[in-house]
Structure formats: structure tokens, C-alpha cells
Length: 78
Image (cartoon, rainbow, N blue to C red; front, side, top):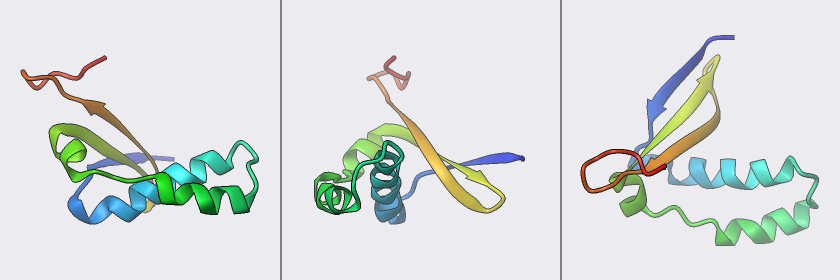
């Protein structure tokens, strides 16, 4: 399987939130709990714009993302 990567954009807010909630579901949390939890996942454009968020795409389907907060010089904070 070939993986592709793309930068997050403003229009990706709901996709980021959805992936966060679904990833919690991996651990077996009940659907009701995940539905309530989704209210607390808020994607902040300032964080995305000041950082570096990339989506991982496999066969045209977004399967995850990763991100780094950048310091004043533009280097990732590790």
C-alpha cells in the first residue's frame, strides 16, 4: 500500500475532529461516550496555521494525521 501525505487546510476541521474521535474508539470506548467526547475535540486554526499538520492518505482514503508545533525559528518542538 502506497501512502501519500498532504497538508491540513482550513476546510479540514471536521476531518481532524472525526479522526481524533475514531482513534479513541480503537480502544473500545462505548459509542455513547465517543459521541459525548466529540464535543470536546476542538480544532483551532491558529494551532494548525502555526504548526505543521499532515494527513496520511492510503488509496484515496485519509487514514490519519500527525502534527508538530513549531518554535519561533520554524523548527518542530520535539
